[in-house]
Image 1 (cartoon, protein in one colour):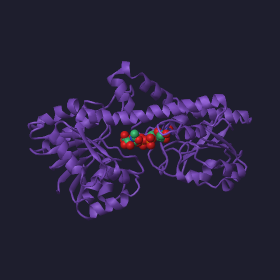
Image 2 (cartoon, rainbow, N blue to C red; image 1 turned 90 degrees about the vertical axis):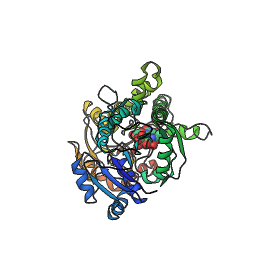
Image 3 (cartoon, rainbow, N blue to C red; image 1 turned 180 degrees about the horizontal axis):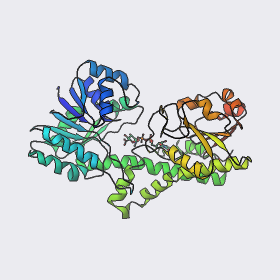
Image 4 (spheres, rainbow, N blue to C red; image 1 turned 45 degrees about the vertical axis):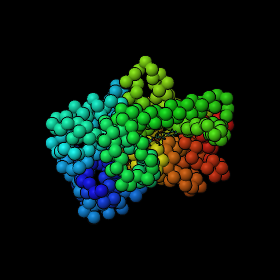
Length: 424
Ligand code: SAJ
């Protein structure tokens, strides 16, 4: 059934969600506090990069089903998809969720549904949202329905996963859950699993924490492999042939706005019982320093004392344009602390956010002593080593993601070093 939907927060999740509902026949109004982003969207220009988003946005706006502005308006359904970061002290910052909820209160009416998509610490719906929604004067659960349906999509494959992934639907009561399931069934082909709001909050945080702990394990194994002279990538691949083993991959750190953040929600809620989670976080946070030291050691062993390197990859993972919480930033700081000069290049980051960043690969490679790959962009996998070689001082490449073709680079005369592969 056709609904009017107001989506608050037009970022990596809110915008694709708004566009999807619009293109499935609903009348959607998107809201963002960022006036610049709103203006761009009104002109069908994107402020974020996501595969397939541009054509879907064009369609949504051209059909008249999607409008955007900086203020909410009346609707049948309100969807909140705003950031839920952590503060300096690693505790949750729920001000965006609170403010976004407060912003819709003047517009909600009896029979409306409010859905929170942002990933939040368990009990946020109960302790942060409901106290705001109650101010509408509506009876919560009888007149105003509320649920938490956490997004689960991976940047870069959002439109595929929005449709195919199963969804967790946590209602404050069964009616809220049923209404939410009905709404998402406009485009979701995966199963929808109904539960209560607090369980849904925990499930989402658990999913990302599982990944963080698993990656920390892989990073620890990579270091152990260094001690005993083994290629951890080969070892993990072989271990994963076991039907009940799924070890993740090591790397220069864990970035993004989810996996490096959500585990702290659990630590904050129960410090005493979240020791593995805490240690995993610290292990992953220590990987940029490990990467910088590895780089320094490799270059020192080659007799290069005042190195200048080309850092390739600033996005927090491959084929996306998002630098949020990217381990590359910390790697660069750690390189600087070790007196290693650098120029960074990332074909997906179109603005220079760093002092020593270039938009041209040739500039990054010019007179470089080594290439340090921090992100597994397809563009880096496709690099032709023979073209690049002449510009550099030394032919050394350090691959922290095990993403280049070692043979091709060696054939071109490069010395190849891979994080976690001490068979070098
Ligand atoms: N990483 C590793 N080793 C791995 C996997 C990832 O070092 O084996 C690193 C990546 O390089 C990156 C970081 O971890 O820096 C996170 O990347 P990711 O692709 O694992 O996850 P996100 O943050 O892009 O998306 C996650 C997803 N959650 C899970 O896979 C459980 C996504 O489904 C969620 O929607 C998203 O968090 C979210 O918004 O919570």
